[in-house]
Image 1 (cartoon, helix red, strand yellow):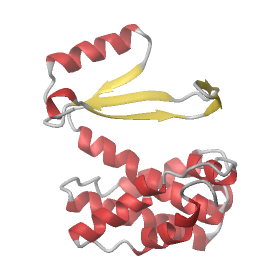
Image 2 (tube, helix red, strand yellow; image 1 turned 90 degrees about the vertical axis):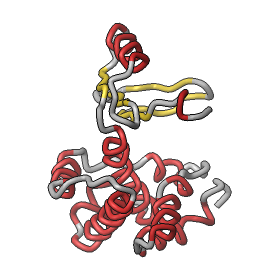
Image 3 (tube, helix red, strand yellow; image 1 turned 90 degrees about the horizontal axis):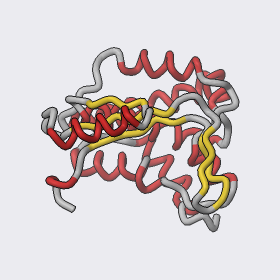
Length: 193
């Protein structure tokens, strides 16, 4: 499409699931959209989109640092999706075991290091904020990739831990935890595992 036709964005949603082909149910409380131009500008097209979202009742943020917002979602998403899928447990047991929680933290730090190598610093307090966030979610919470694994569906592995490993390799950033996650799950990635 080309950069002239694309605005960066990320979405946050809880309690959403595919009920049937083409039918998504949402029973959670969180549904937020964050978008913005990659150069940080408050563009006319962005303002129009922002106004349309507000008019439709969408919880929306027009960001002036969308790369940071996107990496800020990708870092915990890649870490939790990978670790929960490898361990095949929801956040509660992972959070309550020092070794598995360290594994999750290691995966998070690796993605943060890749982000930094790409020019995006998530901040010194990012790990503490993510730890607090993880401490507040219900213990039975599973990642969507873990649920896909449990149901024999195709995994987002190539776009999560796989992306972290590829970018890390390209940039010379070690990502051993994500390499481990990728190796353990890759035979299940197509959903036929």
